[in-house]
Image 1 (spheres, one colour):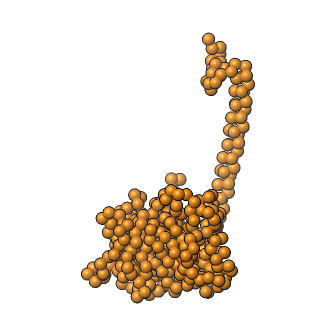
Image 2 (cartoon, rainbow, N blue to C red):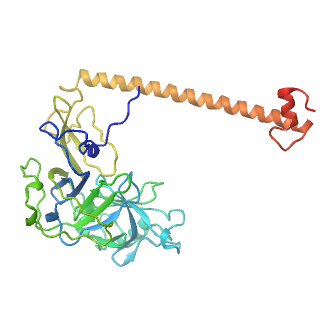
Image 3 (cartoon, rainbow, N blue to C red):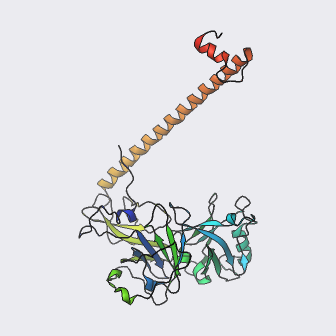
Length: 379
């Protein structure tokens, strides 16, 4: 009773009320960056490492504070525009695009979005490539985010390991674009929540070809140990908020890149520490762990919630979940029955009012016929 959801992981490790000591390694800045390559990936905590990008870091605000959503103004395949908007008002000529590291591909609408677009972007692209397993054209996607264009080349959107295109239809009812691994493999993306909940800033910078992401198990020094004068001057876009200073990363975490489709991070939870393998997903707002390990997940040990091998403790938790599920089902059934009884009562009352109005009509809900029912005859 009175339980609440725990703080999101990034908020928990940046909580100013928690002491930064040998037991708790706390971050001073509530921001992080993510980048990947064909073979590895990396999370940068506290901001981003300027050495990881070349050129300018493009900055734009997220249009929501609950998801990392940017404005997609255009999506071209080669020279062909896939997002042909019908409204003439420029404020309506965009689609929300979620920067989602948990999505492998570029996910685009398979409909006209209730008339917002002239035709389905996915159908239009498929007509250009023909067979998605053996596309007849190998052009580059050009995604315009808030006025800046980012390229997704053929080597990024076509997965040679599985011999298929990594362009997918958006789920039915989803009103936008999901930007997944196909972008993160060529760009570093900054997620700056220092001003949350007032605003969230998204930064996108092209990866430097000379930067090497950490490999799982590789030892490294914290980025904060680099002297400030050794860093090249910061180059950020003019779209940055007034007096905006980009955050600098203080730690680097290697990420397991499984076949260019999923990202896994190994971590420990609780006392004594228990090892878990989790998916790094910027499209989710919760931190969740399984009660038992996924057998084929890249883990460094057993990860049964409660400690020990899969067995008694796991069964107890499963039983508790089953009891809780049954209780929830009965609760929902009770609510449904209650709503049905109330609706039936309201219908009977409306019928009685209609009959009363037939005898003594009135436009008011509290006319003479209803008052007479409460207080007797009305003069």
